[in-house]
Length: 395
Image (tube, rainbow, N blue to C red):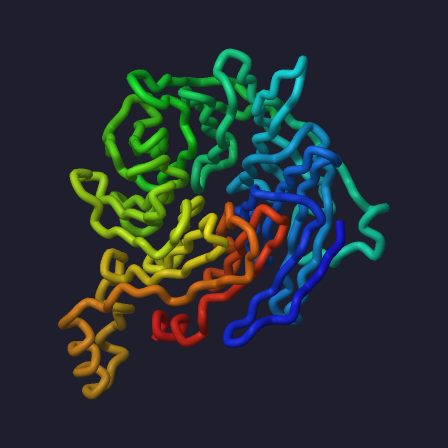
């Protein structure tokens, strides 16, 4: 795999990594909170697939890359443990007897690559390492795997996989080398009953998830495995992705093939709280910033990444609140003026470095102002929130 860093365009700085094959799976290394690190899963039919460990050195503005072999098949989804830097899960295609099945497995990367800030090896072809298989998630009776979700803020021992119309809750035991199915439920009814995506809520003691199938978004209680809310016709076409607001427990974002991004209050799902219509083709991904929930990333088949400032429905609709004791009289008056009216929602930036469909956007788990996007042609772009907006939020 060749590494290529392109010169940053004006007016903002970005860094681009070009892989030599297609890719659509991207995740931050969730448990790594000190170094900026992303994992990319490739999707090649001709060559052995790989997981690229991408380290971004923000002091020297350098991208470093290490490669792990993933020989079992092309990667459709990748996620990482919130508790163990070395553990990850993939959903991948497996071909047997002319039949293609999407399977899932839990892996461990080599010990020396678990932590971030690694430099690229001098000769990447001779330094490619392999993943250690910890366990398979048996989907023989459940169908094709769509994604694997880890319990947020958990110990890395609970995961949920979506397989066709099934929700499967697994307990990882014996150092994650054994996956025991602890409970499950199946989606029943009319229409397209295959799950396309899901998200585990960080709220309510991590007892709720949201799923998407066809044009519908549903909420589930993981204790009873029962549906707790349903947003029928959430989008005019297929729902592609979901994400929970990290700071407001009832707020959920969705996106889909109707080119829209919608924001919902799950206590009242009759109408969306807000709708964005900035993309001109399918919206594949939506992500809340982990720290500043007004910042929303979206990626689309229109080859664009859009950063929006949805401050009116954020946890700080009047901007950053400052303790009164820290303000002078003049500053106090200015703060009162700010409080009188909410800030306006807006598109902050549209990033057009990609030349193919953008299938994934993710925020860094180590730096809240940095994010990555991945297009199908294998182009990974690392960008930052504009400095002016960063200081406007903080000050």
